[in-house]
Length: 317
Image (cartoon, rainbow, N blue to C red; front, top):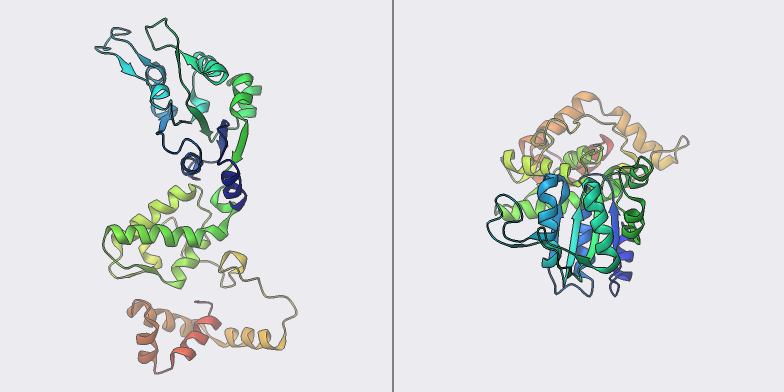
């Protein structure tokens, strides 16, 4: 992701066509908007069109516009998205879903900026910068004859691949914190995660990527009764059971080596001495106090420091 941020910064003076690829829910439109916001076109409009959301017979009209009477129901002329974006950026989301006839017209647009509205023979010109996105492997689509090769290479001037969330697990916690802050602001609530809830988020693969993470946290905020999100507030598809040794996916800590130092060996022995009943009691007291460690320590009759050590040894931090 840092490489993508650097590339966006390097493109700040460019108006080159960009092709963004990646799985659904990875934030391809966010990347496109960021490119627009840091480009010479930033004062112009950012105009998206989602090919997958429109039937083929309406997609061409949305793209190029039409004149009055061009087809049944065209009671007045309409400006297309390409003209709307003439001084800004046209974002073609789901470009792999463009039908063959429209792909050919798009080649012409990328070549010299000319097009015709439906029902009109006079050519028009657009200066729109084009950014396209797809979750489909366009090279495979070209080989299969589903996508024009000349269009592929005209779109792929600057290629950007947005990796799925499972390939950048270190981003899960900061993304989750940002999403939770936005959700809390909308509901006028100060919300936070319990340590175990964060571990649960880190141990899920998120096949739906950032969109799935956003939906899961929106659900958790809706059902959470206090200020701290607990594992039971998460949707059922998020795992509640995971290894106690969290590894790199949990707070970036490495797994213990086979040959521990005396200090880490002592920690390991203390963790082994903590039986299941002790761990369950710790968890129950913390949940009773909504993970308020000060209140939990007072109930247990120990200091906050001792409580922290027990949580660490039990793998609950």
